[in-house]
Image (spheres, rainbow, N blue to C red):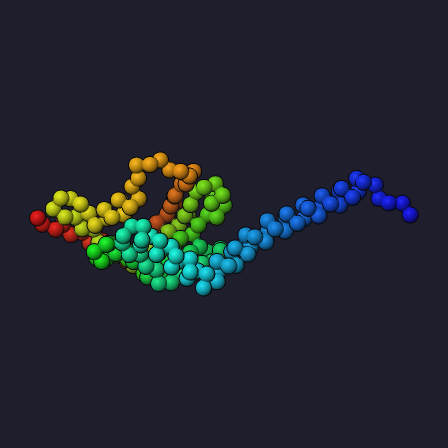
Amino acid sequence: MQKPPLADKVIKKFYKIVITIGVILLILPLLASLLLTNRHIQRYAVETATNYLSEFTGGTFSVQEIHYNPFKGIVLEDVSLHDPQGNLVASFTDFTGNLSYRRLFEQEVAIKDLYLNGPIFYLTTDEKGVTNLQFLIDAFKTDQPAQFPDWVFSVRNVHINNGQFHYNHLPA
């Protein structure tokens, strides 16, 4: 019996490597998507993100519930933002975003449709013209150039249902 030539062995080895890489590239995104649909993982991700944002800005972010569907997007329920003094700045009954996942690979967070249900926004200025949003501006302001590649954030359509806006100017 004659042994297969070296070329046949190399081709078989090459096919095994290509199939293994293909399976890994298919399974990893599927596994990540399945993990993100798990309630416990969603809750942990939301708690981690809101705790980080609260600590980073000095305000208080909260999200009571999150629902992730790989085909429909992300729904955040009972979202609220309080300033460092504890005053409500914004709240939403639910906040739904339909993401374009393909653009994430191009360093772009592209939201096709953003639905804001029951948003309430409070804007307050003091006698110097400083708003209650100053803590956010200060937190994200930097004099240093970014150390990482630029990301683009875009929203194509915003749908607001039953929204309220309140403005208050505090006298001197």
